[in-house]
Length: 255
Length: 139
Image (cartoon, rainbow over all chains, first blue to last red; front, side):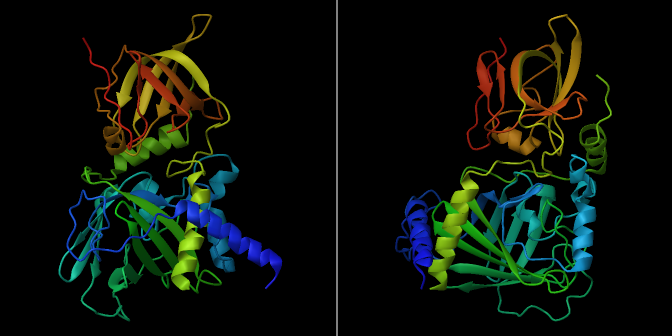
């Protein structure tokens, strides 16, 4: 083990020591939602606010895998407006297309809500009123999910205290992020949620799309618990989208 | 071992992300974020729509020439959480505003959490849904 590797690990440990909250023992009793002590195990319910680390024209996550040639060409097309110094107008969400997964976590400052029932977890995303069902009844991801889906078909399980969601059956019409990263219909997404303390939910997303990327890659995000917030009604309307693109993204207004 | 690595990796990355600038979901390449215009202005309207609320206002220059600007804010639900509603600013309201202009000089701009300000009747209105400010009354 080289001395540089030792210093790297030491450096990461120092960073970790400063940023990790203490992980207390989880009580078995169900804690109140306003408790500052550790939450009950397997309880992720509530409204969460935050985002994934890859945003806008800047891919903060440096783990993006190399793209296969067709995917790189698609990415260049998606991101073409950036070279002209303009906001991206090929963005499908600009004409109100659903975001897909995991971009649903990068919607520009809209929270989401987790609701847990006996055999399903519902994820309600404020942005464009999108919701997802995560089947928790032990069923495997189906080999054939039928018609390609905007938000995919999701199954989930607990791995210790982590919630692991596997999603497949996507269409290829969405972007993985606001930068324009493309994907194929072979995309599979794994979301691993970990409630590191009562108020903090961390998300690790694994993107696996062998038709578009040379290897799996990850995105990381963090969300804060918002006990006093309620998800509002938000719909993407065609007329708002058109108006916004014309007046702000492609301004021709004269002074 | 894997859990520990997950913690350490995400801690390191998240520490980095904590200092990363916050972009609107569509990015801000059309705005000059290195430039800030700070000025008194007179509100002409507040558009309360998706995907971004827009504040329209007149700026009068030293020669007396009036120019109308449109500045992009956040979505209505975010703005509500920051303490705003569709009547928080109305035509005729005098404000002080610091914003970033667009690069093409078309009279557009953007306000962002952390580096912009809108002050009305001595109150700095919030652009942060995590730290709302109650706008001043109108009497």
